[in-house]
Length: 193
Image 1 (tube, rainbow, N blue to C red):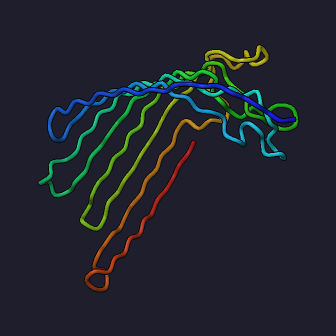
Image 2: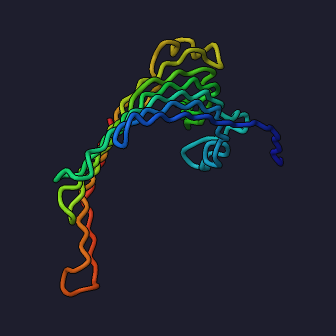
Image 3: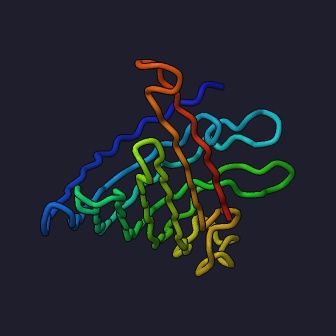
């Protein structure tokens, strides 16, 4: 049988940035966002994940406060850091729920997320640059869609990582063997917990 669904949402965003000087800034933002279920979440994969055509789109109110610093242009090592503190108030969060034989995607009625993200870069020399990022957050289920899930209220979303780190070292040169040729290599590492 054909599945038909029609809904509409309006998202909007506002931000303000204040520069204390050429090297230090603060930024605050608010966003009203939404996310529709993707095909795998809506229809499953036909083998291991069951369909759920009753999924609703996620809606969220997102608040961010960010601070940034970069070194003086005349310093021998160029570096910078940006740190963002965020709060997300999400309704109808889509997540994978283990039910019956095959799991399926369902909605959590209300979930709050609080965390921070920090990114640093260091230009070690004209040829070497390091970039690193770390994100730590906690989610708390505030309200559930089905009474059978009441035991989840006040807990974190199951099977959701709460710590993510990334690091990359880049090597870039434009004169490896002769003038005008180029070479670029990167080494990167991800960590998720």
